[in-house]
Length: 231
Figure 1 (cartoon, rainbow, N blue to C red):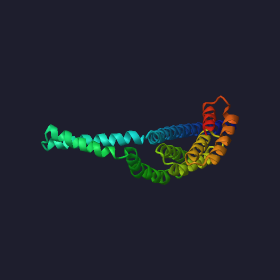
Figure 2 (figure 1 turned 60 degrees about the vertical axis):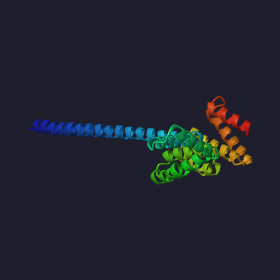
Figure 3 (figure 1 turned 180 degrees about the vertical axis):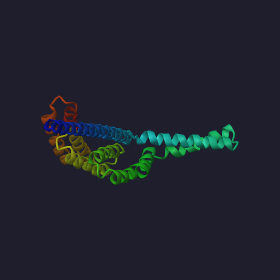
């Protein structure tokens, strides 16, 4: 009887263990599925942010200004043709348009359009949507700083370079490659603003860290040293 009781208890224990193992397997699979989904979402988010950052940094005001002028010229010509204007009149009107365009700085016009309609709204969106995601916000702030610098607006670039550097220093550490990139960008912007002493001091500190952490042969280490020589 005791033997039957022991066998029965062992059977119950075995069933319990099997049930526990099955539950753990299901939970492990569920956790793995959730982890994979989170990784895919994070990867997709990273790609979107990278695309947005690249789009910001690739903005060229000279090309944009010329494109706007060419588009306006084409639209004027199309409108004149729709109104039945002859070849001579269209040529004369377009010549007048070209003369007016020669008196305008198309790059300045494009820069103003970009700042008002794209960059300023982008700043507000980044701060509103990514304020709790420092690495993403830092990447976009760095892109904004680079874009404003390329547009010849260092005064507007500097706050974004500052934000990118501080965010990366806090989330990635002071000697992370991306942190040092933002530090170097800040130095270049200060140089553009005529603040050469501050620029040189910051770039020198950045080079010391590049050299120590990544070595003298690292591409960005050598680039930073070249920048310092130019400065």
